[in-house]
Image 1: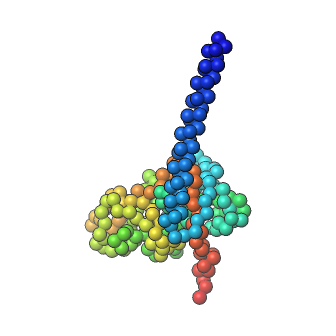
Image 2: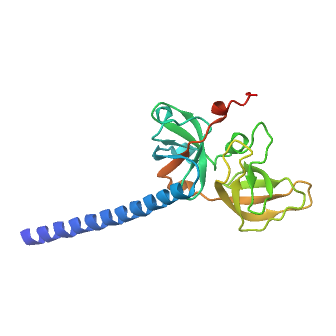
Image 3: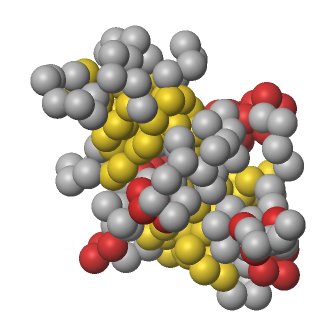
Length: 215
């Protein structure tokens, strides 16, 4: 009996070791991707961990481990290795609340400024405004009445709204040009908001830092 108990304990310890190894491998892969993001992005970035999220606001907000004492300001973009996660909604000295791109209230203050300005672009130069719609998707409304757009094209921030330029937002999922004057397409977000652990705060000047009323 003693020998069997010892063997069972050894098996349990080995199972825990294997689980730890898998966890470390996954964490190593994630950190490699985050490091690669920093290397290919021209903006200074601050790494932060997702420390809290509510089941009631799962698609709306997360709380991260960096705050105003770290230089985080309201309106700054938040990304990970996949693309645009959201923007800083408000801060405390030690934490910040991130409004996710999947939140239906994100688009008004996230992509456009005072209701105008091209918030997004395609690699071929087509520009438009993005808005978050029900179901976790985005809709890109084009300025052109005859846009050159096909499914599978990547969508980036244009830098003409409140977000800095060239952040990957998502991919054209469905084109709906229709017969109306305003042409649009559905955009699938690049980031999987279900799996947010580590993010990067893009340390570009916020609207308050730039001084929107400055001459």
